[in-house]
Length: 283
Image 1 (cartoon, rainbow, N blue to C red):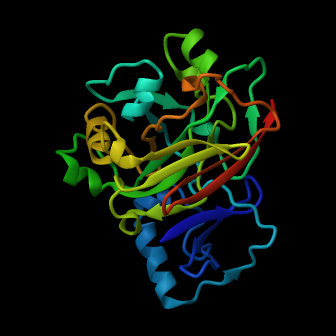
Image 2 (image 1 turned 45 degrees about the vertical axis):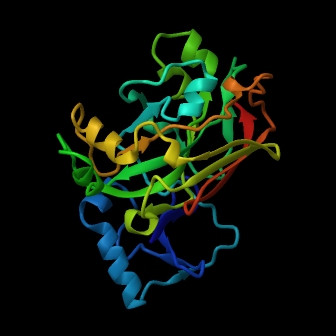
């Protein structure tokens, strides 16, 4: 099942996308798609209403698609989680997941404008698989337990400012938490529909030139391991998002470091999870 939120910023309504591409209004099931929805068996309630066939259809023309999840509790990110990306940045393969946090306020819709920060000269792109947590998780005992707390997956664009990230602070947060720096969506695809999260292709193009062409099988730490690992150090709650890392091809690792500028267009996708497209503007 594909869950999404449509409408103007701050006025989104919950919806479900059917197999034939129609959009159905979920407002009778839930006021929004958020942590409370996930924690209260919202996915099963939405699935039941879909089976009953009584959800009204929405006209998609001119309808903005917002982030599929409202107000993530936290965004936990995994750095250097693809061997080829670690190599292109000159970093060693990490012995354990590299963990950092990203401001949840960075989340915007998959087609919204992304802003190059003032003073930025090294704004970079990163296509990633996002994991959305559906149940409270603490001290999980291995991969099987981890799978049971995952509500679904989405396309995530972990936009980064490399000077802010790597040169202005020993921590990465300054370069990761600029406004609009995490387009998410278009859909939250439920875990049962995705199947194996380690069998998904990822790609990203800038101004029509393909820059990233990767696959989740090349992760150093797979999704199940990441979720179980994080639960040993923090409580994961419904509505939390985990960005699981990016494959090679970021501007930082390219010979001419072609960082993003206002007017550039980025298109990205994860197999089975939909596509994003953003034109960059100036903050």
